[in-house]
Length: 225
Image 1 (cartoon, rainbow, N blue to C red):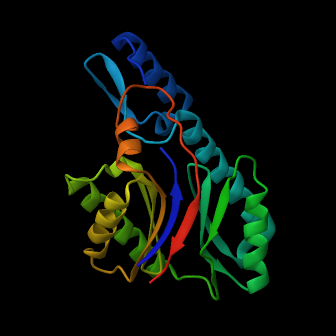
Image 2: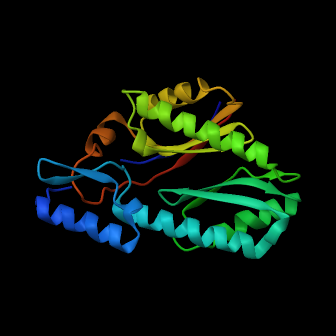
């Protein structure tokens, strides 16, 4: 098992306003950025990132993917996943020099705080291999939701060649538990945690509240098996 850690930490909206926020997001095609439900007349946030970070992450992924296409064309297949402005690179590139180039290009995208480069140097994955990875990711996401002791919406899941990458904000206890859940899914070769680690007190301050930004920043660490 592998881990990459960063250390880090709203108010109520009337029902009508909460509905307007959600409706506006749907009409603008940005519903994915408003992750919440209406409870007790308030829009409850189900993502531990600030709304600004969520917007930045979506923008980073679009820009980074576009720049990968410009840099490599069909020679490589690079997937970028951003969580709280930390970008994970997975996929395949032809050479070690291309791997370095990909990281440098993504690091220059606006608002990127750090890059975790997990690119594989070698031939592109086959359609069958990519389909297996997609299936594993889907199963893990479902398992995280089923795990009642985890906040599934705080974790992003990416799979490449059977290696599962878990990105999110949570305590070390949650990171360990999420890894345990992922390892229980058939087809998983290894689990890599790319987490911004919170203390239990910091977690308490970031529990789902109402639609409002939450702060947090800090240091990263990597633990490999």
